[in-house]
Length: 190
Ligand code: GLN
Image (cartoon, rainbow, N blue to C red; front, side, top):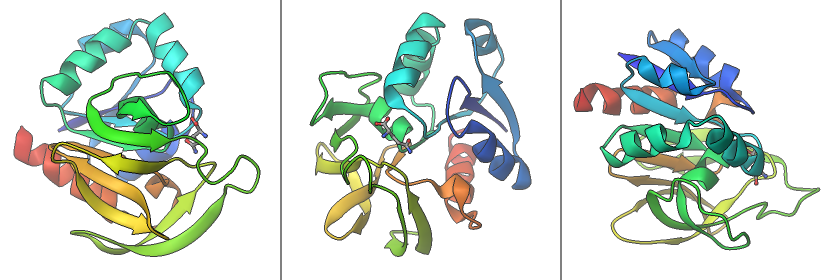
């Protein structure tokens, strides 16, 4: 099993470390040629969605990735990655992959005081640590997307088919159960 981590910007190294710690092999996607490698799952890390969105187009990664996601490749998208997957943004006119039927609000906790840590129940996993950094949250869930966790009434984790969308950064905490659940899902698909 091989997982590709989008590595154009943001917290990709931390995801890689987690996944390798769980025994998965990883590749980093930085340019179009990297899409020639075979992989079974995709991680879209946190960072800055506007920068990532621009780079995936410029580096010609966009079409190949969108095709794979539409064809049913499992995706773990965190924070900026969630923004790239969302079919609608509440406060931004951009749509990137648009494969996750949710409306996401960027920088939803305010730009300056937007970072915090909490522990909250996540469906199918239990109580998990959650680190939020200038995070988005999910304002609306549509078409069979399933809510997995909320914090203070705001949705912070969803699953839609084989796509996980999280507002927070599981790669930055000591817990590995979310990455494990993702790898289990990939294992079922391949
Ligand atoms: N604020 C960032 C954005 O809108 C997301 C922050 C993050 O990934 N930690 O892209």
